[in-house]
Amino acid sequence: MKSVNDLQVFESSAGAKVYQIPMDAFPGLKTFAYLVIHQNLTVLIDTGSGYGESNQQLIQGIQTAENLSGQRVRLEDITHILITHGHIDHIGGLVEVTSRTSALVGVHELDRRNITNYEERRGYILRRLEHYLIEAGVESERREYILGLYRFMKQLFQSVPVDFVYSDINMQLGDFKFLHVPGHCAGHVVIRLHDLLFCGDHILTDITPHQAPEELTPWTGLGHYLQSLDRLESWAPDVKLTLSGHNKVIEDLTHRTNEIKQMHKERLELVMDFFESPNTIFALSEDLFGSADGYDALLAIEEAGAHVEYLYQRGKLSLENYEEMENSFEPIPLNYKRQ
Image (cartoon, rainbow, N blue to C red; front, side, top):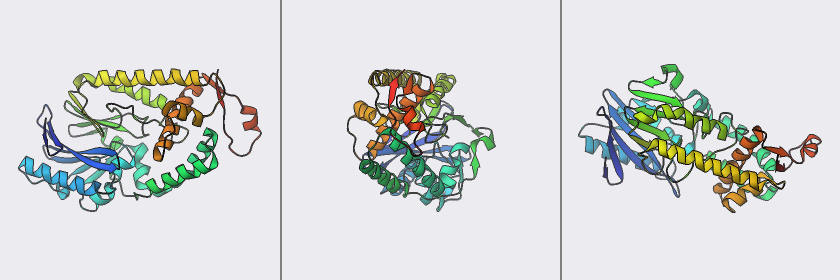
């Protein structure tokens, strides 16, 4: 591994060259794309957000990789674009990239509509999100502010075609192998190339990957995420380095996975304690994360809701005001309590 002007270079056990390209996805959020050259394949894993200077930084990173490799590497030379998951900070650059290359775009089938029917999905999720925020106990003015931020963020992308889903190729492309790990995103995959693992947002250093309730999007939710952590255990012994979509390289995948499991276990215990008295998801989010501002407020409410949903599904929490809910035709704030 070596670093050149913030671009890091890795090599797999079988000689594949990997160039980690840093980009500013949004203010305060750095993300990585990975350019991989192996045999007859030139693969781009994720594309950044497409926001601000992200596209320019991606192209500059590819140019740096060309200089380092000593061979021609241009956008038009890329054979495949592999998406780890359908969140905008990983797919937003597709609009620019696909206009400049004929590379085949692949994604898991459960995230395909995030890319090909983006506008439709954005409108659908907005309706579900408004309902969810009411039930979470978010008052109307703050709710409208959060929904406005969501609309703005989600207008930064537009639908683009997808050429294949990973199940079409039996979860393998040459030496690239795919594993479905839903939770953080419905169609999230990790990609293994020899002894390297590209994990998107499934495993991160320093923080636990964001969780949202399955109520908003099927195949998300804390339950699916924890199961996916278990599913990845079979790959861990063969992985030397884990390259994530954000933050540092992970050298001990099993250790980091166990840390994340422990963090969620501790958070679930805090949630149980909080609901000794009836209260809302929004109140829980402020207790866990403080009074968050901007888009972070939505992330905090979703994270809190994912833990409440997990416990409620398993009979650990109940609804204190379920009779009021039954008698209302409109969504109302829901008060949860420890069972």
